[in-house]
Each structure stands twice: as structure tokens, then as C-alpha cells.
Image 1 (tube, rainbow, N blue to C red):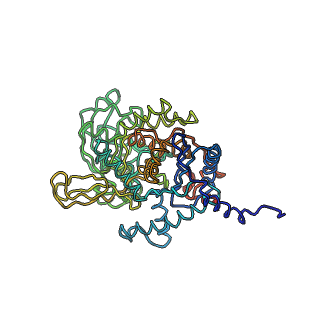
Image 2 (image 1 turned 45 degrees about the vertical axis):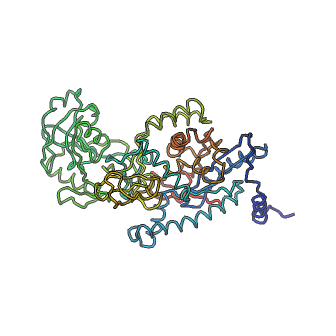
Image 3 (image 1 turned 180 degrees about the vertical axis):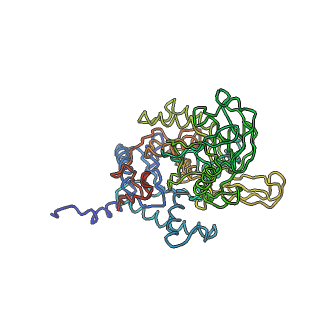
Length: 536
């Protein structure tokens, strides 16, 4: 007997026999309730790692157990194109070759990423077979499969027709390095210390951590109940360095205990200021562009990166004796969930999904146990997120993904939304020349439809028999990104919750406590840890 078992000699052949026998492909038995798991589709951008092995093991145990019980058991595998994550990784590979995405036209770049993903997806399938995942390969799906894309388009059109989609100019979370907007859920927050500058605006002192945006100020706001500043309401303030007069207004959103109690209102670069601006019908000025550089400012600062401009503006404010004092402030700042760099709140026109009408039935499904969380704490977290969601920015300024089926009329500038097919003419003026929007969908918009989109596009009758699915088993960190969105969109499209049970698992972490990932980033060291333990 050999001293130890050599899995490489035998397991590939054993798995091939299992697969060839059809043991992983369930038979539909009418009248008998199936057991179904839709595999959370791994990202197509990287090989699998030990974290995936941990997740797959749990699902495989459940699947094999119910299969041995004689139940019709489906475990549907798939892969996610992963939008910005995949393009971000691919751009890093281009950078290593001295290239960037700007060196290629849209079609060429998309094809290059597609080829990279296909190669990696093949490796991922091999890895899943090597670890013995008993999933049904005859039903394998990819989020960019043409029939999946058709489902995504159909959903978007239905949302639009129901008045739940609009194109609007609002403050969005923008990453100048990734070159795209992000939704509310994709911004991470880090605690750090920053200087809080108390600036002389003539009749009032204003405290800010972002003096480089003073050029975009349109008002100063104070809380009407603030005794130290209420007497300034109705007067004017003067923006230092450019000497522009702006009104002093009252608004209850201002926190009188923060800083000086007076808020510089910059609707073009802050979400709260934007709300104040809408309420008081103020204009919005943008002074930072999509590359993170200063624009529409005095020539001295034009073209500077915002963080460099901040230092220059502070220096000039000091020389003009407009800084009354500086205090250290411990606060949270928004950073890109990909590269951990600062997020720039920015005024931009995007496609938004109204979430309030989708939240109500989702909360009802959880309340009435139509969706059961095995851990009560995660149910509470899901409810918290649902109750605090804001309209979802579903458009991304990237090439890799599903292009938004929106066409703009060159004549009247109105938009026409379709189910994917180019319109023959404008719905408003009948003009025949239209241009498709260059934006793509947020990857979570398509993956949020995964349970019903997969089963609607596999074998005939699959959706009717296997939907709603039984268990969803992702890691807890994508509860707000994916799980609640699957519930929202599943209920909207099918009138049924997409799964009965939410079984969330923990993360495999390294010695620093950081999640195992090919792109793991330390918030302390702000650099890649390369902590992946691959499954092969």
C-alpha cells in the first residue's frame, strides 16, 4: 500500500465518471419539492482561492445530503463578469505593459477583457471540479450570456415603464482613479485625523476640512436655533481669496455643534449641501473634474490634483490671514472599495433606480418569513440596510459590462429606453438619429437578478419547477450588495422571493485580519497584501 493517498492519480477520473453518469443533473419529479442552490457566481477576474473552497464545501454538503435523501436536487454553477472589479484588474495588467485603457477603442478593450475572462473562467471551472463540487455543469451560466443579458434588459425596461427609473443630476460617489461612479453601498469608510480649518468669511466664521472647494460655495447655512450664529441670517458672507458675496441662510440640517456652527454650502461636492441647495433653489458649481483635478477656479489652481490644490489654497489663505485657527478632527472619509483611495462626491447625470417601492415588499417578505435568515443578527442588518437605502445609481462609466439600453435623440435630447434593441426613431420627436449611452450597468444590477435569470434561461420548465430556490449561501460581507438586491428585484419581476433561506458564512482571513482575496488591501498600509491561498 502506498504510504499516502495520491489524489492527483484518482480524483480527476472519479469526478469525470460522476459527471458522465449525470449524477449531478436532477430529474424533475412533478409533485415533489426540489432542493435548489444557485451558486454565488465567482468573479471571472481571478482564480478561486481558499475562501471559495470554504464556501463551496458548505454548499456541497447540503447538496449531497438532499440528493441522498432522494430529492430532486439542483446546484447551478456560474460566473460573474464582475464589472469594475474585472476591468480594474485588467487595467493593472495593462499598466504593467506600459499601456492604459485609453490606448484602445471601446470595442477593442472589451474584446481584450472578454478573452482574459474566458481564459480565467475555464481555470475556475477546472478548480471547482478539482475540489469535487457536485454542481450541474449542464446548466452553467455566465452573467454576459446573451439570454441573461436579454433578461436584464427586460427588467430595466419594466422598471422604467413603471416609473422606477430616471436619469437625473445628483451628487454621486465618484472614483477618479477607477473613472466611474459607485452606488451608496460601494463606498467604504475609514477613520482618520484631518485639519479642520476655521475660515474668515467676513460676517461669519466657517469651519471646513476641504478649503479647496471654497470656489464652489454658493451660500453659508446656519441652524436657526443656533444662538451664536442666528443673527447672521439674511446677511451676506464673502468667500476668501475670490471675494465673492454669498447669502447666509438658515437650515435645520446644519449641526450647530460642529466646528463654528456655520456650514459652507457647496451643492456640487457634498450630498448634504446638495439637499440644502435643492431646498433653497441654489445653483450648483463643480470645481473638480472626473480626473480629480481642479477646474473653473483661479488659474493658479487649474489642473492641480484636488489634494495638491488643498495645500496651495491653505498656503494662500494663511498669507491672506483668512485662517483664524486650525483644529484636529477625527472623522470618517469615504474611500473606493477597490483601491482605498478617496471618493470624490461629484455632481453628475446618471441613471437611478427608485428603491422605496422595492423596499416595502422586501421588508414584508422578511417579516412574514418568506425569506428566513438563519442568523437573527443578519436579518437585523438586512432590515437596517433596506430601511436606509437611497435611490440606486445603476450606471457605471466603464466598458466591461452590460451596456445600458438607452438612446439619446440628437435633435430633442430626449432618451428612449428599450429592451435592448436599438429604436428606429425618437419616442418624443420621431427623429431617426439616436446615440446609445456609453455607460454600463452596475454589476450588482445584473447579478441581483441571478436566481430567476439563470432558471429562466436554462432548460424548459426549470424556472417553474426550481424557483423560488431553497438556500442562498454567500459570505456575509455581500449581504447589502447582493442579497437584499436579489430580494428586491426577485419580488419585482416574479412576485416571489428568490430564495427561502439565507445562510451567510464568515470570511477566511489572514494573520492581519484581512479577508483572503487576490486584491486584499490593508486599510492601515494601503497596499496589496497578496494574501491569496489558491485552491490549485
